Length: 223
Ligand code: 5RP
Image (cartoon, rainbow, N blue to C red):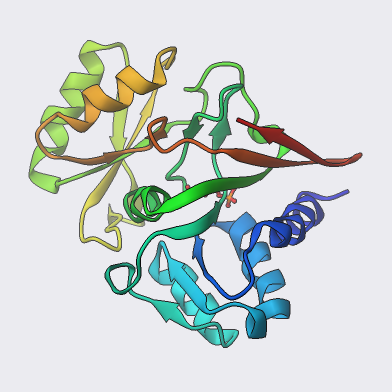
């Protein structure tokens, strides 16, 4: 099975977690795009979606799925999103698509976080994937020095010749060389550094369910 087919498999499998009649939280990325495409098949049976990025909003809208402002709705029953890394406790690294801040907001607004990914995302220790951190641009060099003091190397994510600008008007640092053995403490610590908008460790907003696509089918992990 190709990577694309594996993503389509979990995108389809995630439909079983969508509660009919309700608003569903929708993440960002190529795996979520498969979920959005599958969601279109039941668009008449849901109230709509809260989206975590401009890209997902556009895809949902193009398929005729109403998108609500997060402030206009209450708690959501479920949030469906991908990940860059998933450990054995449901702790995640996210932000490969630069949408981590809004993703964490929608995850926090949801009772259940269902993570969808192919099996290559499963790791023993978080940190192999460069850790995305959304930062206020004037603080990026100092935050990079704070990571260097921990043994990490932080680089500003570029879009061509200029720094990539997120949906929130901020920049992304991608940090390599870290082993995140205590995700809860690490997330709390980095989030307190001045200028950090959001660190891409999702430990306080971890996954409750993970649907992992393998060549043998979809494996379900529950926490
Ligand atoms: C976007 C994310 C994505 O969920 C993550 O990067 C996985 O993306 P993909 O499904 O394309 O591998 O965190 O900010």
